[in-house]
Image (tube, rainbow, N blue to C red; front, side, top):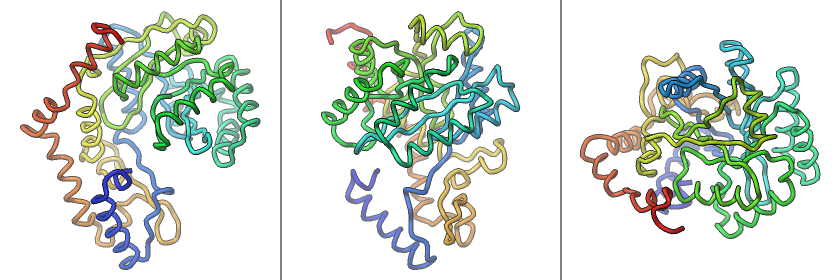
Amino acid sequence: MLGTRYPFMRRLMQRLEERSEANHGMRVDYGLSYWTPPMPPKLAFDLESDQIEELGLEPIVSLTDHDCIQAALLLQTVRGKHDSPISVEWTVPIGKQAFHLGVHNLPSATACDWMEILAAYTAHPSGPQLKEILAALCGEPGVLVIFNHPIWDLYRVGEELHIHLVNEFLRENKPWIHAIELNGLRNWRENRDALRLAEKWGMASISGGDRHGIEPNANINLTNASCFDEFVREIREDKISKILFMPQYAQPWKHRILRSAIDAVTYYPHFPQGSQNWDERVYHPDANGVVRPLASLWPDGTAPRAMRWGVAAVQLMGRGVFSGGLRMAWSEEHELRLALGENEI
């Protein structure tokens, strides 16, 4: 992503890619690479729960991974199926773009079967089949389907085309989408536009977020429901949704994104083995095509010098005078006033 936006980064990355292939016989494959956030599932679940309990409320938390329910299944063994629904963020390709749908509270007995269906669609998308899948999901009374961060142009197809695709998607599939997400890690403008989108289509809006660091989500839903099934009924049937934005959402968005990046490369000695250092949380195929943590791929057990310098530079931006200066430079006071309705929109 950085390489496509900044030519100097593309040149640096190309040199590192060529060195990897020449010295170690490994071609860098971004498509098969991925990273996981620092916090293991249980710690992430506890962090979200703690934030809600600090408000004097009973927490109901649904965590998702991209196109995977392994963490949700693990949480159910720890927390019990009533406390931790099986949920997933499903990638839905739409032409040159892709949308993310939050599919929450899959039935335990058929969750793995559902994941096979969703994964098969992601690999080989088909418009008519999408309607069938969404209609079948909607036929599960306890399932909640959310259009996540709909204004975010993930593949940078351009704002005009992206919004056109969003509206076409809703025109075709609105009956099976239960709410539009206001995302706690996206900026004021995007969430204002997402709220307008929900109003345009007569849909409920709902809280949500993307966990990239160790900050709890910056918005939550307030509900009288005593369990997730009751909350689903509030959204699906009553279309009742009250969202509380937390104090951290008032911080400059770019500063929060930087904070997430710093969290992603920070060393956490108290975390479980395999989650402590950044290169244990980033995965890439080895020379035989087996996906492994980067920490096990470094020839001498240590990340290349250029990568260590890059990580150090990111960490430096979060310290002392650098952090304070960036916070001032990235002030969003005007956007905040707009979001609070102090100026006309």
